[in-house]
Length: 371
Image (cartoon, rainbow, N blue to C red; front, side):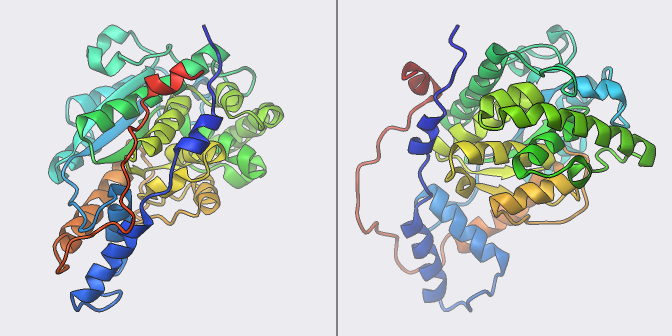
């Protein structure tokens, strides 16, 4: 099996959102006699929606999808989280699937569907529906402070799985993805990736995650320190970095973010996990962050460093640290409001200044055929 992905392809395929549509959206607001800045952040969000949709007036958000990648991490066995290392992730997945998890209830409130993608939960795949485990790579991952999380082959499979999920969502008509994660120990892994990519030490990126006390924080910090030593030698190879000190969910989310940008599918990031993956993806395709918005600030120092490097400003700061996409979902009403408020304000439709035939956007299968 081929164990490589031509990451350079993404740099050439990811284009910037449509600036002419963005400008047209801004002009529509002014021509309608509304005060500049009268709707505050909603105006910026409405212009962003126009640019990623490539049209003005903006089309209101009508088919949002909460997308949660789930996986277990070997470092959880060190006690870096308050959540149980054994069975904790599987229990969170079941709560989302049965509708009892907060993200499921909030998604129902705001009219968003929820999809869980199990890429490496440490449980029998028979415990979940077939559609949840369709992209599973393995059970759990290696302990990244002493061993690789994934083999090179597994890393590529996970990355390609994320690409395939992006194609599935784009083809199904999803117009906005609210991206989250489910995994005990994931904030430790995210801190390692951010620390490595930003060149910081362990203490600067080690947060409280699930609400750990000082003793557990020191254990977590030491784990990040040891993992950073393993990450630094492979910093020049993003796939090797994801395999050595990431995990199946991190590789899949990174592949998803890049292919979503290729397919012009906008994404709202949630916590430190999606922020860390976005930072890796930025190293592969520098234009990709223009297709994303940061849903919230969780208070994790690694997330703040990632967003600073990505030049993304969180839409909200509600102090939500549980992950699961909750922060991204809470940003959905703002984006819905921006789309609704700015959809029909202008007196004339947007006419592109230089019409051109849009090329067929390559799917993951198209990209793989080029390898």
